[in-house]
Length: 139
Image (cartoon, rainbow, N blue to C red; front, side):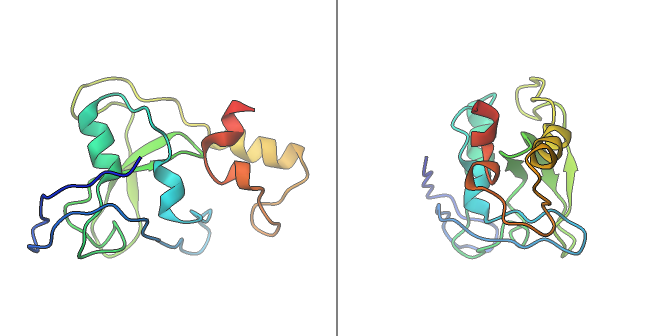
């Protein structure tokens, strides 16, 4: 899903949908490109879907845009509020700030267990494509 918006961020640049990239710091599981984080087509409400899909024409990296509020990682089924402090931190959330729905339980532990079961070290080995987004949950 590509979301296009004519809304502008606080910097006066129009919103757009494009796949930005953000890196991971030391000791952080690599994200593999922001485009893989927003492939889930079903979120709890339209407001959450819009926030997850938000892109800014002036900021390729959502952590640089003060109007980007939510990050969704399809691999782990985790939602988080972006911390705009110059880094790539998020605060995990369990309930939608807009509709109040309980968000899915994190699948982070299961992701690591599945990779370990397959003999894959996520820090050293090539990670299969289906484990780079939410597809692995459907298999």
